[in-house]
Each structure stands twice: as structure tokens, then as C-alpha cells.
Image 1 (tube, one colour):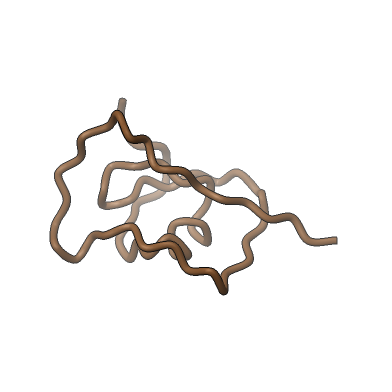
Image 2 (cartoon, rainbow, N blue to C red):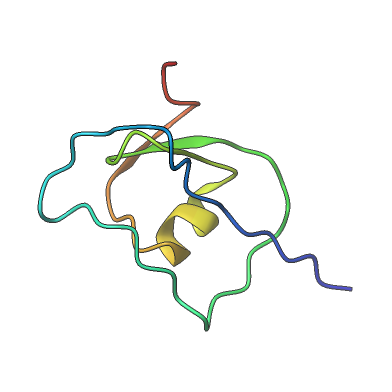
Length: 67
């Protein structure tokens, strides 16, 4: 059985990002739902590094983003 997980943009959050940090969803990705949060360069918390990568985020650090 495969579990699919998707991230959603927080439309109310204003984040300063670099031109290289853009969220672009890739349709060809399959990620597990394992929660191992990472903070993307766009200051959005993703459920795991796979979800961040599949969202087009190339730079992230382990853990949730500060609120």
C-alpha cells in the first residue's frame, strides 16, 4: 500500500524568498506520509523532505519553521 501526502501553501503567510526558492508542484512524485518536518527556504513547513523536494523546494532544514 502506498500513502500519498501533499503539502498546501499557507496563503496567509508572507515569506521572503530568493528567486531560487519557488514552490512548483511536481505531478510525478510519490511520498510517504511519515512526519519528519523540514522548513523550506520559503519559510513553509513540509511534512518531510520528499514532500519539500516534490514541491520544488531545493533548500530546507530539519524541523518546523518558526511561527
